[in-house]
Image 1 (cartoon, rainbow, N blue to C red):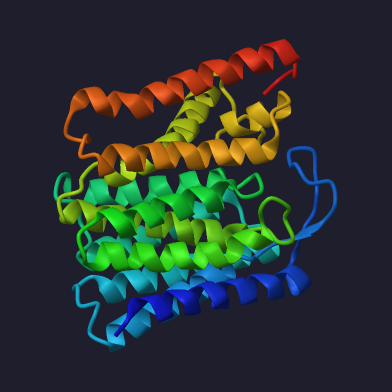
Image 2: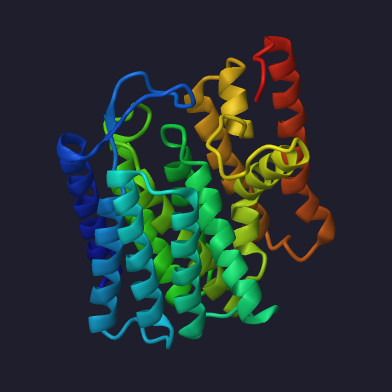
Length: 317
């Protein structure tokens, strides 16, 4: 079976569903913590979910997917996407989504998806971390989509042929079909159905890549996302803020509030993901000095954003 026709089909299908959701999707109403000022449909990520799951089933039917954890992972991903869709319709609580992430991660681990270092508990924590992180950065047109596109595309191109590279290619194709409807202008939002699914699948693909020897690839690709979420949670915890409460205190939000064009912020994060991919591509991930490059980029970005925010006097964040 040739892979390219399948990828093209996933791209077209995801784009078609995104276009339909732009017309009939549940509306995301503007409020004080959001960037948009008019209602925008959400749930466009449903197309990514459908395209990916159908694509994986097609690969399975043609004997190209045979790993033992395949069925469990697909069940977990579909379950999490379903909860995300309910959240797009009814705005579920933070804790409801956290429980759903834990259940999905538990199903995947029970199916045999385990990191080569750390075991099941560490794998479960990793899957929940990446799912939450991608969900939290989905607050700006194109940001989450571009990061997922670059990360999944790098896995498809850099990892040896196998489950991880195939899944990365399918995920990248689905996101590529969705993005024209979300960036640079949003006709539809990714929604929780898309952001939670994409985050979970990136976590899964990262575990699969680690099983093939690429232990640092996904952390490198998601270094900016993980840094932003970790920095923000640590800052809010030290300030005594409610970590479950919605806010506008992420670094990417702070940069936009301080005057940086939102499109440039999204492209910056795509660039950070590409930087991680470059380090992996050059075979430098095994050299501690080069691993400091993505970390140094985040430290520099953080200091620049904080300085810009102070000059702009944006107030509490």
